[in-house]
Length: 180
Image (tube, rainbow, N blue to C red; front, side, top):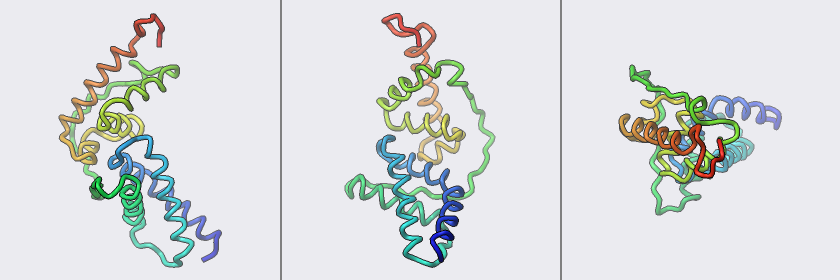
C-alpha cells in the first residue's frame, strides 16, 4: 500500500472514529488538559502502525481505543487503573432533559475562558460532564453511562454547578464591579 493510500485511508478512519476516541479519552483521563495530547498521540501511533503493517484492521475503532487505553496507562502510570469503555450501540432513552442554555444565561465571548478555568478547578467529574454535555452535545443518560454514574448524579453536578456559575459569572459581575 502506497503512502497516498495510507494517508487517504487514515483520513477516513480519523473522520469515522474521532468522536468516539475523544469521548473515551475524556471519560477516562485524569486531567482534561491531557485530552488533546492523548487523542493526538493515539492517532499518531495508529498512523505509524498503518505504515508498518500492510493489513486491514477489522475493528479500527476498538483498535484505536486500545491504543488510547495503552497510552493512558503509560501516561498516568501503572498504579492508576484505567477502566475500558465498552462501545456499543447507544440507546435513545426517554429521559427528560432539563436543558438550560448555558451560553444565553451566563457565558459570553468575554468570559468563556474564565468559566472554563473555573470549571477546571472543580472536581474532574464536573468538568467532564460539562465538556461532554456542552461541547460534545451528549445527553445526560449517555454521559451517565460513559462515566459510570447515575443519571441523578450527573444532573445534580450539572445543575448545581450551573447555579454556581450563574452566581459567580452572572449579570451583576464580581465584587470589583467588573461586568462579565
